[in-house]
Length: 400
Image (cartoon, rainbow, N blue to C red; front, side, top):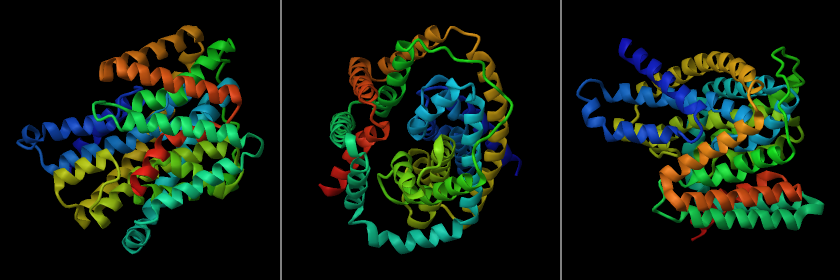
């Protein structure tokens, strides 16, 4: 127990660092753990390393809300929250946006744990039924997304195809170390920051008093939908948290920026947790961190599954408290600096990381993806259509 507690604490510490640092992904850390596992296993057990990775992964899904809301630098799981989070930040409610994230994340992880036996049974039953129709399900979702835009259908289609073409080119390049980083940073992060600079945005004083406009009904809908869509994202190969969020919004209807933020955060966290059930039930991994855990243990047993669930719940509780504390520090800091200089610094930092990982090719991807993101802003088309960068490659993968 002492060894597992030490692994939990180390995972929490690492998850904090990866969560608040744009571009530092948990998969990178997990791969490093696997690379040095021969050395580590001389001193600790495979279960120790697995608990470390899972606590880090769960913690990351809570802390990554901070750079998304305050810095406009989201990672893959938070890309759709960048815009509504930014709107709340501009109203002096950045801390409240973080609270909405935490409500969704913590609520969905509790509900998902309660439904764990149902998820495991459902995966085993549904797996052979849906394997051949995944591409067609995604195509139906895309058609519905674009059709509901009414006056902007053609612009939405153009942006979806532009982002999809870029996604195909980027994800098809096996020489890139971090293909998603410049792709998503440009589409959803830098393009938003550039618009903010152009509009000469000044961040107002952030209010730490909680005056929530999120109704209990909308919170219940967002948490329930997040758990259900988290199951879908963890179960269907190639169907990630962002695609699940797009589908979920069409199911739950209008729940406002507040409910949407809770929904996306909830799906992100539930997906990570339920991926453990996927590895146990189907012996398949849907994300990099759980893949490494599978390789370390070779086989996730019922006993280790129960340990992982307990660790996830404990990590979620502690991460919630830490995120609340750090959010207050971010809120105080963000108004004391020159916003234009801060944004330019963030853009430079993202470009520097991109160049470090993938040299000039990464910078070219960053430039093109930013241009497409700016086009979406200029046309005033919802940026969820830019998720074509991931959906088109996935659809073609399963069709071809």
